Amino acid sequence: MRLDDQIIVQHNRKSIQIHQSKFEFLKTQISDIELIISKLIDFQIAIPSWALGSGGTRFGRFAGGGEPRNLEEKIEDVGLMHKLNQSGNAISLHIPWDIPKDYQAIRNLASEHGLRFDAMNSNTFQDQKGQEESYKYGSLQHVNPKVKKQAIEHNIEVIKHGIELGSKSLTVWLADGSCFPGQLNFRTAFKNTLESLKEIYAALPADWKMFVEYKAYEPNFYSTTVGDWGQSLLYANKLGPKAFTLVDLGHHLPNANIEQIVSLLLMEGKLGGFHFNDSKYGDDDLTAGSIKPYQLFLVFNELIDGMDDCQMNHASDLGWMIDASHNVKDPLEDLLQSVEAIMIAYTQALLVDRKALRDAQLKNDVTRAQEILQDSFRTDVRPLVAEARLRAGGALNPIGLFRELNVRAELIRERGNETAATGL
Ligand code: RM4
Ligand code: MN
Ligand code: MN
Image (cartoon, rainbow, N blue to C red):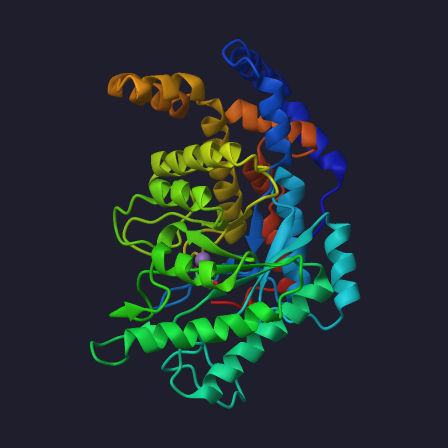
């Protein structure tokens, strides 16, 4: 389904006046508003191909109908969302779920929708039909060199697909680890994994990055071979300058101080990418900002502080991606909500008076420091985010328009009710 520009123009006409009055009010409070708007227009978040259908849980999957049946339809869905909010100009593919049949045709389709290909993701956490060796006891860490080899070759294959599509990075997330004490030797597992990652790293083109994603637990429940940011950083440092740590918000033990992790990784020049989602308990993969919006803001606060310190470009120097997977909401509405929450947190963090904050820190004025942060967090920046979207050609109310147009019903009409997107 494709949207005509005119539909967006008409939709915006209906609510432009009320938007303008809210925006004018905000203007009186924020001094460098134009600079912030230009940053918001530049800031883009990649959409994972596996979030476009119902995620399900190990207990069941409740599909909502009209799910994309192939890579082409996944690109169309991301294109539609980008048309609505102008903030998600990239798609991240997971191999083998999204192997393109015709690279050129897929590239053309993506560019018709104004999309590029973000990080490529490998999958050694499931066995595929016809695969010779099993990943039941791990992949890159495996004690059997044949399994390691198969997993390494798969990752190199993923890089090759990515090169054809114009991607510039590979994300390696491993389910490797153990479920019971004694099952594996931690050091052997680490060394095997490092050895395997080195071979994959050697196959990276010069202008590519490798993101080493960590996760505290699940599907392994006793140890994970890339279990936390320390372990990921060890690998990244040992691999070389093209390897970085990737932080997925849901991959920490409860109450971890993620903002501090982000800050130190940036200081070390080793933060590479981000997976946004939210959670109450673990890797819940809920909508970004739906449970802990203050944490999301604090993470962005450190991101901006650290990136500005290293003179990094907010929009292009880190990989920004959503990584979520749902069971109960319309996946497209859910992604639109996630993007909005991310944009809000980014905007609020841009408002922080950093000079005043440093001053408060130097004086140990704890109350003032808290006031400064919460003043930004409690500012309703939604009109600012909407203004940036409007100027970029998006809809003032993306979810409102999505519903007005009955997009899901239209997708069900086109694709049917029984479709299931490849993915989780
Ligand atoms: C994992 C992890 C990875 C993603 C898979 C599907 O929990 O977050 O990034 O590729 O899920
Ligand atoms: Mn992830
Ligand atoms: Mn995850």
